[in-house]
Length: 82
Image 1 (cartoon, rainbow, N blue to C red):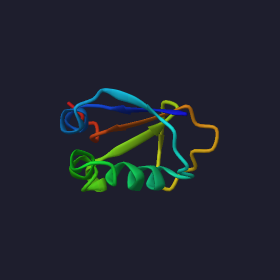
Image 2: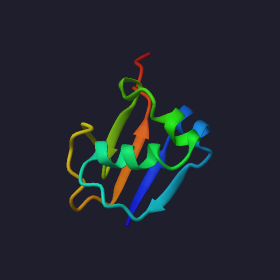
Image 3: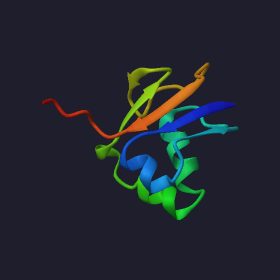
């Protein structure tokens, strides 16, 4: 099981702040593909990966990063400075 967290507009599009999933995904990209296939709201939220960042267990990661041993994956828009 893995906890998947959604922040900002990603959470708004999906309609959930987090969910616990059973997944066979080995990378973040595999997880995104699984999520996209669930419902249209997921497909919309993950339609442009260049507009998303990902963290695995609270550390920034790439979409090709392994999920082996991961407990949490978070998706969020890029941070902006100010």
